[in-house]
Amino acid sequence: MPDIFFAQKPTSASALVGDDPATLQAFLRSNGLTEREMIQPGRAYSLENDDVFTLSTLRRLNSLPMPERMCLARSAETMGEEAHILKVFFETHLSPEKIQEINGLVGAGATAAFARLNGFQQALVKYQEALLNLTRAHKSGGTGVGARRIQAENMARSAYQTLQKAYQTELNRISPEALRGKNRGNALSNADRGILLASRSSSARPDARLFVADATDAGRMGSLSRILNNTGRLAIVADAGLRANKIHATYENGGDWLRESSVQMTGFGFAGAAGGLTGKYTILAGTALAAKAGLLVAGPVGWAVLGVIVTVGVFAGLGAGSIADKRGRNIAAGIWDRS
Amino acid sequence: MLDGTPEGWYYFVLLVVFAIMAVVWIGFARFSMARIERQMKKDGVKRQSSWDGVGLRVLWYASAIAFPVGIFNQANDPLIDVPTVRRYSTRFDRYLGWALMISGLIFLAIVLLGGFFFNLD
Image (cartoon, rainbow over the protein chains, first blue to last red):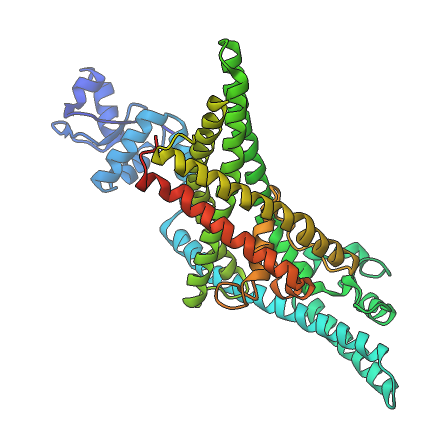
């Protein structure tokens, strides 16, 4: 590809290539210019005269609207060779049509995903119901119990079939594929396993492995719990660390570090209690408000709302915690100084 | 602290309230919550509050048990299974839960509002 330049200010052809007639003629020819024409700013030109593609490339470039050409010129200036690669990438993956398509998919995908998750949860609940029904049928006695047991078993099988047919991907996510044919795992491995667990369950309460719908809730809780756990632990470590640092600094400076230590510890306790309580009450109020507005439904939307409420609660707790920390420290200081 | 100034009195009251709340908190956690969790584990009900790293699930237990099921105590709270926990609680647990919630609220109120009424630094 020929080296393309963009003119920054009006020049003439002779100023670029000199006065040599042969070179000038070649330049004018390959750039599609006439002799007297000034090269305007933003116009693309090339100094290579033997390349066959020069004229067509230049014609293409010069037919772009001016703002685009200027943008291209600036990119060429800053990025040099890489501008070409970037252009190809943009055209392939981020052209306006492509972006519209992506937006459409995201919008449709979000509602579809929600509906699908809801459907999956409902199918799980049906399967769980069928298994618990089977447990009850196995425990009860009386006439016709054999027929009832068989009926319950068939219901469990068909419920599992729904899960397998319609929600194969989700099922594989929460129950490993390797257990499909085996008599292992929980009730989600296969229908026979579920039926076996249900009929075997002898204690007053059904086997915990039958509660598959609740197990998935725990799966969804997984990320929330990880965030809360780690944030809480990190916060405590950070807070304790800062306080320990202060005590150590007081010790280094020869100050009354015992006093400082008792002061900091009291503050820590107060802050922890106040932070937790504030968080809890904020979440309580927030959940009440959200429930009133009808926002807390089971499912991903409810989870998002709850996430916001919990985060607000955490922040409120942080604020209250710092105030309580001050009070606690003042109390400890007061007691210490008295004695 | 006990020097007769309003701030001194404030801090004294705050300390007393905190002591009461601390005792109730530990009592509830040790007697009610531990017992409930032990029984749930024995019955094979899945552990509810796996999200609790810092030990604040005490408050969730207390509010689930104390408050009547309603708008302030959602039955389908994702963070704790309210009906199950309520089934395991006794009347003693309910009293302790109420005590914790109320003393906690008083403690919070005194901590946060003290700055408005007294000249604290």
